[in-house]
Image (cartoon, rainbow, N blue to C red):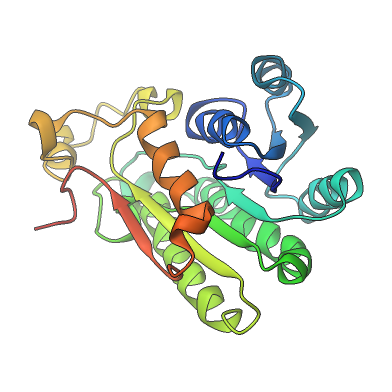
Length: 248
């Protein structure tokens, strides 16, 4: 029960990594508020997790929506200990075909959404010397071809994580990022465009177990560790769970 008595907000929790993190946090004793744009998925997630979870519709690209879920968590539970920014989108494509609309969508969810959630949560995290775990990516540390907007957004998440870790260190707030490689989630199973060099993409994938992808539970393990007291001396880390993708 590493998170016994802790209050956590988890974004992107209707499926994939976010759902795995929410379930793990509940199993470790936390009271959690989960958010996602997928209303049906949120309802199913709450039913799966049980009484330790509540849900609120959330669009991390909308500043008011980010503030609302933080206010809801604090109003319901009296404070906030952990923020997990898991919500994200992926958009494969040739750079010439990534127009401003596609670029803005990825940046607004993956990077601006993290900024908005952190900004709304920080005063409450300072009060309780809490922590933030952001979901970055191996693509936040190295380049991934045909994934320009996503790669740029995740590099931004890593940079934001490090900046906040330093700025709020005196207040006792830890800020870390998890950098997964390929994870077997619905987001990664989107059909890629036909006109990209998929072999080039796969050369920047995991080397572990013949390129096998991680599971959402693998990533939830790392997130839970960083959110717990076991990681009390860790801040500003870009914690890789990528099967060696960024090792070389």
